[in-house]
Length: 74
Length: 365
Image (cartoon, rainbow over all chains, first blue to last red; front, side):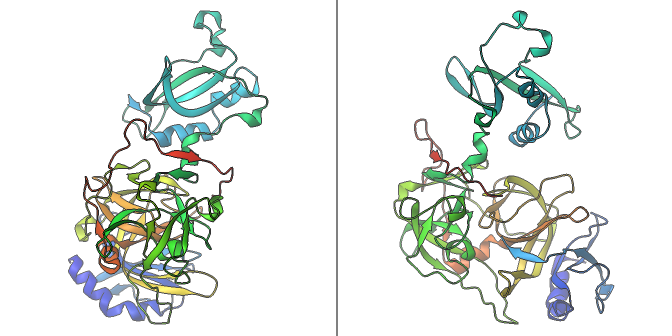
């Protein structure tokens, strides 16, 4: 699966994903658990798997990265 | 054996080390990070400067008080497990321990500097402080202008063209009228309305005097940013670095692309950005950024500019902090500016043209 495909998947789903409570970012990148694996990365403020977040999206695995305070302008 | 880099010296001197113990037992008067000096000539080589009452030949000193010319310190990141640090013994007395000079390179990032280099403190008169990212060409006016974030130079849409820009920023002691360096030229407005999608947090300011700025990024080097790089899937994991006002020179890697990110600007305002670059770093490295680093330009290992730093998350004991960048090509396109090419501005600091730095005695982290 290519970056183009991942970008298309994000385009299709990002609005819905960003509406899930606690989700503050969605992107395509390196799995935190396996640097050789590419996945849809979801940054979320709460611990655990966000409710309603799918485990896979159009063939891409979804992984969650915790950012307790969310993102702030620096 | 690998020679220690600036960050290795800084880490050593900030931690518990043998010099600290020697100060405590009055064997030396102090120590600091500086350049090696021989016969009054300052060399490029970094050195731990050790201050003593009087320089004596080694044979006149007890073994415990001798300072070797180089130190071998165990370090796991070095190929042979050791880093080499150079020392420089100098005669100097101070009236008290409080008078021990702090490492000067640290102050570079938060001091007043003329000409001002990139990577140091700057800010709109009504903010705290951010980072002077670099210089770009404004084809509209033909001027060389300062590039940073909207929230650094334009106070998050609250500024107006002509507003005063201070170097250093107000949090680092910058005040009007002495520290005014530029006026806000224009910015890309951030749309905070729900559902709105932003691409960049960017602004430019025109220096009052073109000789007050220098195209040279602290700890990155001259002639930056001359070239840019648009990132694609193959660049995931790319090593990047930046110099910024708070965390100074740091390194990280590209963790993710095509990011849609919600960013808080204050208690009430948040904005969504799309097509963003996400940078992280290994747990053993220092955080890639922190508050005050906004506006830093981020480079690959060939010093090609990839993005403009503007946001991030705090790290914790279990989580690594994350940094968000605007892709540089979007910044240039939306601000309608161009990268400078080598030769269009002074690209190196010639002898006798070192920027003057004046500390304000305040440093915020």
